[in-house]
Image (cartoon, rainbow, N blue to C red):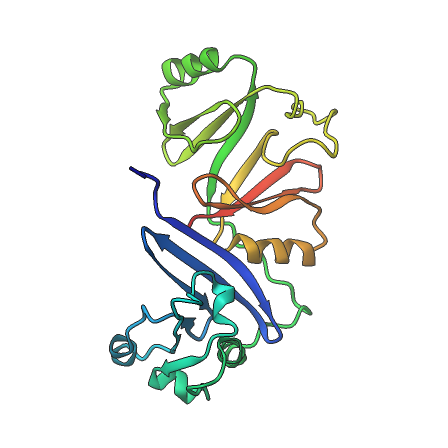
Length: 251
């Protein structure tokens, strides 16, 4: 019996008219995918036109076939639009055009801003602090028995560690190993893996978009965007003093 959880993935997609977020949702013997823009959604047949009409949502639906199912958002690009809500039709989306054409029309409704003024990443709050420790059990006793934190569930990383909760902030412990860097980063090199060094993290709305803003600001990226075992999308980068900062979004 397969007890694995359903799979949900998301990623940034680039079009001539700007950027969108593609999503794929899969569970046993079924799936659906979509492309999300600021103006509306290009998706598969799971979307209901009656609800979209009631709530004035712009939805364009493409339909797959048994031979060519719509599983990943990229599958929508060449698929034909078979239905569209009144709001989507008001933008100029028509039955028969491709999903790519419908997406470009939706992107044109809200054009991306010029790079002349670079927007900020908009960090919401400090989510966690990560520290490297020599003895995991010794650190567990200190943070739980001395500081009163609680051990919480940790995703299935390939390296040893522990997560603890301190109110609204977490402390992430990583057991020291060759791929970690020292606190002062003297041994950081090209082989040092993102996330396995001392750093602090902020939650953001869109880690893919945050990575773009950081590059526009000339910030040096250490790693990402990548997905961690529980699906969160992470990006690591250096601040002006070479401290490592992470931003991520939950999915």
